Length: 447
Image 1: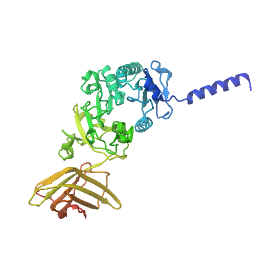
Image 2: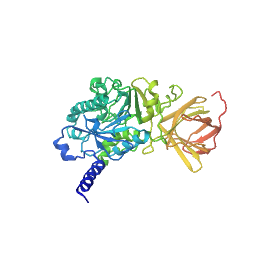
Image 3: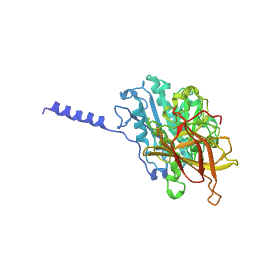
Image 4: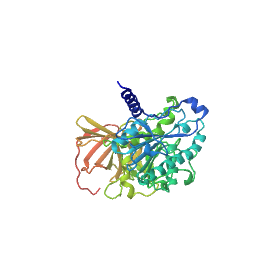
């Protein structure tokens, strides 16, 4: 082989190596957390053409990265406090789901150097500098033709407030901020200049999953979701014996709920209400948002942008694990008993071999003669073409005299699909004894 051929082969190999080289998220450890880290912000680019191999972008020379198309939507993923220095375990899934939904630029904002420190207060101080770093980068994007409306920031914990600081630097002109359980410690009670608020972007949506510990309690966006009331997430450990999961499970649940929202097979409809108690009691089951009904939590909530006012609180409940989404029915019961009976309700819907269950036990429901009792029944999954219904009432006291409940009408109405309601008339129920029946079409009634 000639000298020039050898040279071409050599340099060609170098180019192939450079093209295949992937930049990765900074991986630190407890030693770094103990001694503390200084801020360094690394921006890792992923696209549909390059969805597994991150490329670190220059903050100042975007022309060096032809794969970064500033005319597309650019989504920044901004993590939070990293007390042990390890990379977030959800990062790859979130990046992948975003690219599956839309052809965009995904920028993983790696500020692990700065976020890793046992001194949480020191990390909070660093958030302003991280926000300034991103502000400079976005201004460079603008100079290269990017529109602020095309900027989407997803901030987790401290990352939510960093997103807010960036948005404030652009007078709220960036397109959207999604805040996944914004950090509460050292932010609760702060003025809007020192935390995320609705004026930081054209649309700010927030989810609260750990408001009584690591998360922020009060509304911060144009719409604020409080799954399971905003605390005590089902399936999370209840005692410290579970180790680190006890501290982080509820805080991280916001991320996993958001991840699921990008899957078309599982959506969570949320309802506006003044309190979680009123929501569970079935007092908030109607939504007047044009023709599109109650908002769906997560990625697609942007469709409700024009219908929302700042700091509205919306509630929904979840299952203990993936799939988290549940199905909502309005349950209406009319009884004949002379005396008021208080009891808990369990319902099962059957479709062949499939069964789904709803338990209404947050408090004892009250049944009075000829009075319609409306309850929210939340099933662990959705079933179409319901063939049978199993119904049980329980007074919750095994020592009490066994009572019977004379039901004049049971009516189940799906709150998301426009299915015909399911009814049954004239049932005699015995305390803690399940009765199974076939539903029939509902008749007009004065009850």
